[in-house]
Length: 283
Ligand code: 6CS
Image (cartoon, rainbow, N blue to C red; front, side, top):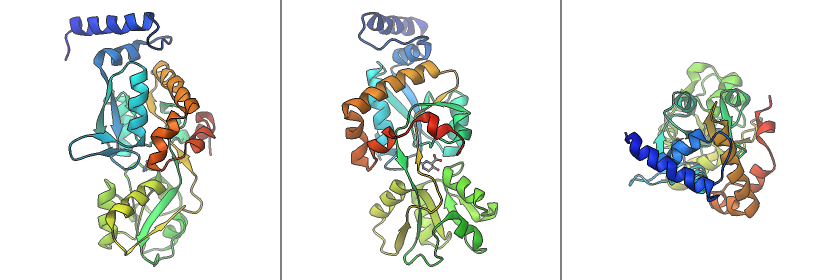
């Protein structure tokens, strides 16, 4: 814990930069000033490439953290420090002050929009299912899984695919919570689940690295929306969110946003074709 003297000097230095016009200044910059003084923003990620990834040496990459790192740098926050979290624990963790922001591909949906302060859209994607070659159970939708009384589907705990499966009528006991992509892949390969569902780019990344000819991707999952994420801030940190959005808009405008996310397979145009308000409206 830094002593208040250090924190005070750093905050004054940051404030001096603001007053000198070197850093963007927004109303009620309390949280942003604190992050500047802290020197980093604590971000929640899931370690689900290409959205988020943590290498063996601890290096954090992926489209969401790369956008966050660039924006925070422009806001005068030198770096990000990532913690891996299950999707279902991200919003509670944000509310409990364990993270400053969620930058993980946490898709905007009305119930989440009611709980956090989202930025404008960043990463958009459809949903997919990983199945055995030949798609032996003929899955095209979550409803197809529901109709087959013997079928089980794996999905992240508290994630969108878990909710889509339950909402389509798959009984709780046939929706298997899977902690991460590698576990989902293994469970499918071992025949412990009949399908594993993640967004298209995440499933494609898994298949590319698995080098297993006995896999097949069902994409897009029929009837599932295309979702977009945003950076998710705690309620009360709207000034920080607005400062983040201002820099995000500049990145989108300059073409630098596309340069960051498109090498990962994401579409800048898709994110720029919609808005937080549209995505947070009841579907
Ligand atoms: O937002 C979600 O719930 C979903 N987002 C991603 C990037 N992966 C799976 C998760 O369920």
